[in-house]
Image (cartoon, rainbow, N blue to C red; front, side, top):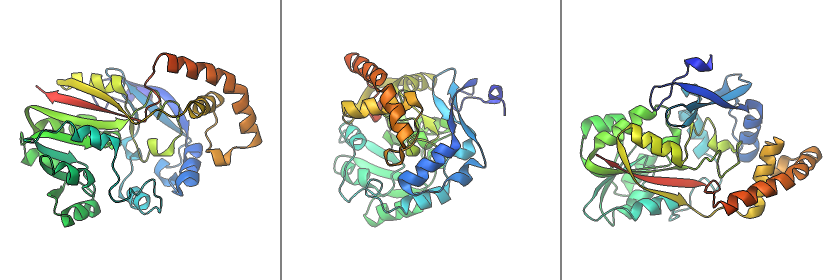
Length: 316
């Protein structure tokens, strides 16, 4: 399909092809890093294309069918990996960001609430309920006494217009292809002057800076790449006021930043445990340039190395 036929899932305006990924390398990273087989999701594609919304700068993968469906997430959540399966009581920076911005009198909706970990803590502060399309997660939240509905955000918006003071969507937007439908639903749910608190992976230009082939930041897991600029432009398009932007977590160590930049410059897509002698030689050759560029980023106080960011948006 020609790139001229692709339209932005944010504005409906024009979009242009801005980058490409080798599917074989991405498939191998999923297999090596997580033990997941995702070749069927790419339907024999050799290259995966990234497009840029000309109006907002938002970048997205196309077609929408690349986004993970139930079979992918069944396999994903079946993984026996502590970095995926959050230990009971573990807490995330984006949840803390949202929690600190909820007032006691607020009525709060957690979109994509999963097992209700954020809701459980937020319920100590305000009146909270959640929605999610995953039935297993909803059952866990409900078993813990949390008010949770298994439904889509658009269906919930139709039934509950203007019913909440705050809508929280933590690490959900990057999974959504139809951004317009999703944001309009969030807007419909909140009252006038209500707030949306949204967190996403930070892509300047890729996850944590230069980790282009990080498998969980690519299809079928993530379908869109957001950064502060595209979030601000998206908010303006939908008539939302940006109240606050926060970068979450601590930047990676200097050595890891240099490695990621060198790997990008050398076009090395493999994980560390897969690197060949030729890969290491290429990384060493590119390392001086990576060091200079990384020092420059640090001197400019670049925010590209933060893994996540969050925004607070107000409905007019």
